[in-house]
Image (cartoon, rainbow, N blue to C red; front, side):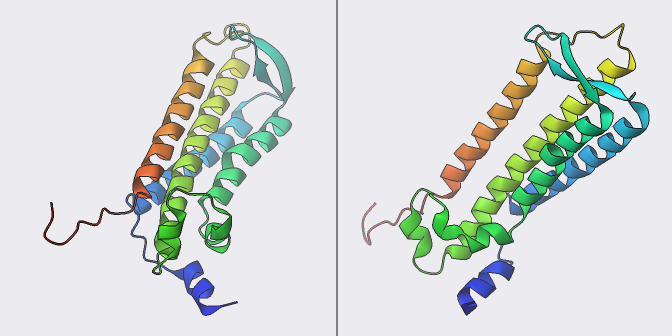
Length: 189
């Protein structure tokens, strides 16, 4: 492995705007997801609602363990994989990012990796948040099946809309963070 790749994998420059905040966000949301999953496992009955129609009515029920396996894959494993630094440091040539040549020239690979990792951690935290909300709604509906046979019809569109809005904001932040600094000509404005 070339030395520049080896240092890229362990480089701790972390100069991307929001790098540490993104790490804290995904860590808090992963922890919350794990705690909520534990509460769900200990509290939910053996069958839980897993599918709702457009009006918020429960359409399908599954076993608690199948629900948690799926939730674990989407709400814990996938965000952990997205939040790791080393895969993104190993495959930067595959990344199709704006101003790619700028980031590849002049030893800016570590800075590019930091920005991509920050983006992925923010999206991973948003995914954990969405999956935690889905788990809580399913728990609520499973604990009082006669009372909550339907979630409010606006609940899932609002949850999904919040997730997509957050993801869009992360994409816009990434595009802004990948914009190279403007170079002003000497003596000019």
